[in-house]
Every structure is written in C-alpha cells, then in structure tokens.
Image (cartoon, rainbow, N blue to C red):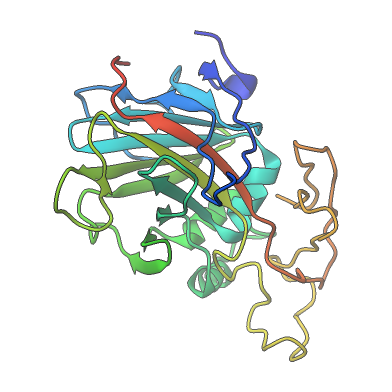
Length: 292
C-alpha cells in the first residue's frame, strides 16, 4: 500500500468541490463520495491510527485524511491531520464533526471533541509543566467530556458512558493529530445522539474547526469588551491576523499549509473575533461492500 506524506498510509485521494448553495437555497451535497468499509470486528477507539493504516482518504483540499468503517450497529471513523491550519483551529477552539443524513451540508447533528473552555483553562493553570501548552497538554486539559449537538443547535455536555454506544478519543499519534469515534446507528426509535441511518444510506460528514466552539481563545478571566485588560504574555494568548483568515499559529510560529503564511506570537494581544471557521465536507456510503 502506498504511503502518504509523513507516513500516512492512504487508500485513495479524493478532491471535494468547495460547494455553492443551490439556487433553491438548500445546501449542495459534497461532491466527494467515500465508501465505508463493512467489517465484523469492532475497532478499538483509542485515538490511535493502528486500525486505519491503508484506509485513510484525503478529504477536501487540505492535508486532512478520514476513514470510515461500519458494523451492524455503529459507524467507526477516524480523522488524521497533518495540516497546521486545521490543527491550529482544533487546538484553539475544538473540533465538531457534523452528520447530515440528508447527505447535504446541514449542521444537523454533531459531536464536539475536544472541548476547550473555562475548565480546560483551570487545568492548564494547575499543570506545572514548563513552557506554553503543547498539543498533548492541551488534549489532557480538555478532558474526556463530549458535547452532543442535536437539531442543529441543542447542545448537551456529557461525560464518557453517559451517551450509550458513543465513544470518542483523540491523541497526537506519532506527531499527527488523530481523532477516532464510534457513532451508534439506529433504524427506528433510539437515543438522539444515534444516527438515524440504515446500512444502505449515504450521509454527509463535515469537519468544523475554528469558530465559536469554546472560550479557550478568549482572555482568561477577562470581562466584557472594554473591561479589564488582558494579562500579558499568557501561554494561551495569541495574535490573530483577521485580514488573513486562513492563518493561525499552532505553536509560536506555524505556517498554514494552504498559503504558507505565518503569524508570529505577540505577547498580550488577543483575538478580536472568533477564530475563522474551516469546514471540510464529504459524503459517505454506509452500504459499501468490502473489508480491511
């Protein structure tokens, strides 16, 4: 099996169109269509790539790869990123994976993990490790809670085990951000967090990084706009050039793979607005035959 960049074994490379709204105003379906791999054995959801080597496909036009496997009652999926722009957004405001059973681009049902907010900030402050937070420390600070989004806007934060059949994990696996999940499927009545999709359906899956998905990117303990000044040189303080919407730092200085631009760290400067959203959509055929 050929190896992709940085050692990712890739099944295929697909290119998705950016997508425009249809004349009716309905979102246009993603042009890229991936097959899930039907298998009998369950996958261990541990945030590692070992179950996915050779079964990852590039999604969209970023250096982000995804894989899908289906069992009788669940959809397993993995995301592996070697894209600094995508990673920077994830580690500043979290990642929401959207599912649209109508196979368009609706933010209908989602799973957000990791979740960054006030609790994550407190954990980072309690961490006595030297230096600014690295990605592994950020993941530890985020914890294991998951935010479930239903009906496009209803959010519920749950701890592991509170959402039956749902498992999510993430890690920095051999230097690459890796996200893995088990999403329960239902054909009739069932919990709201389960996908109402049959084995022969085609659904859309969207990856949203950036945007207003948490408050780690905002000033710790800051009041409303025009209130208290931010603390200088805090490790979670970063300058964002809002004129270059696709540029964000992953560490002190990080190039974005889309344009090669860089945004250096500036002490005491906070984002003027929410981190720009990056969304990547693809369709997934749940009924594809095949195996590992």
